[in-house]
Length: 67
Image (cartoon, rainbow, N blue to C red; front, side, top):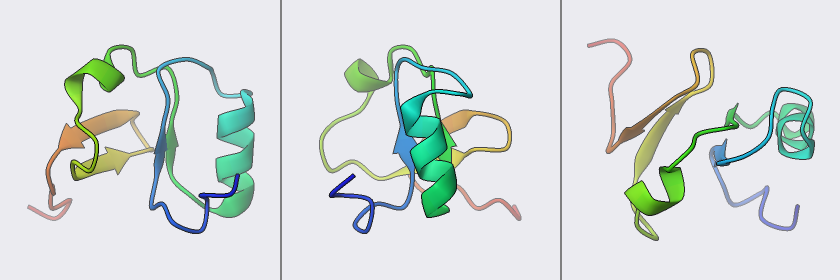
C-alpha cells in the first residue's frame, strides 16, 4: 500500500479477481493483473513492462496499444 502512489500497474503471481491486490488496485485506479505465473522469474528489477488489465497480459517493454 505505501507504494501505490509510485506505481503505474500491479502484477502478481498469485491471487484472483477477489484478491487483496485486485481490490486495492481497483480502489486506487491502478491497472492490475493477478495470477501471472512465472512473472517474477521472467522480469528484472526496474524493467519496464506494459500491463493490459483488460485481457490480463503483461508485455516486456513499452507496447503501443494503437499500433
